[in-house]
Length: 100
Length: 226
Image 1 (cartoon, each protein chain N blue to C red):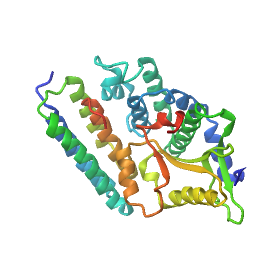
Image 2: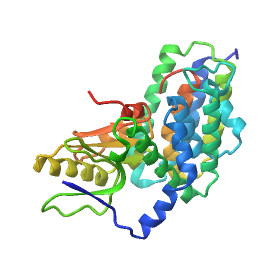
Image 3: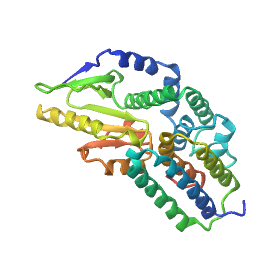
Image 4: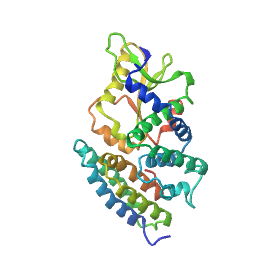
């Protein structure tokens, strides 16, 4: 086990998610959809943090979340960013043992 | 109500080539029995940046890690899905997008063929009604049988849900009803239900009678309805 908790991983994921959201907002026609989509997934991740945030995070989960963060950090295309605004939270949730 | 092959215009010819790509069939055949985690792996990799398989294996510890479980996925199948998904990702951006769309259609058709007679499942079909101008765009997948026809439009992601497709599906359903025919209509979206709900909440086009099949419920396509 790492010294980190599930909340630590989710906090890190949400920081990266905010940057991804900004990238997606570059598509002006989809601005409000991007905002609503991000809110929906942020709410889900926040709920997991509230209920299970103090649990220790397995090393594999921490590595998975960090790789997912690295993956979205490489995205430059705002259209791809919008697709990952849905995909990234699902990957994070599965990595920490939760259903999306 | 009657069904008809779509016109063989230039777009249809190009897209038929994509649909016939062996990679599409191979990936769909793997995903038809896949778990939710394996299908999410495919979605991530096919739209991902990195093409290094070890990074994806580490990103999905429930499939490839020391704590992997049979419930999460089959190790051999997960590896095959990763390989096929990387092959899709390796295509150019435009082709990759077309392959993903064709994949969702093929997966839908394969799942439906487990529920109904395979010859009742068709692709790229128009639905014609008396006195109604025919839609230009064909339906991705149809089930054509007396008294229990169905039409599906397939999308890679929730963002693909838009007013045009919702109107087309609902118009077909209501036109069928006007002819005392039954036509069930649904969207199949290779994305999470949560994301689809967000997208649908923004739509004013009628969709109350349109089914929505998502990553979580794909297997339902193969199962008899309630």
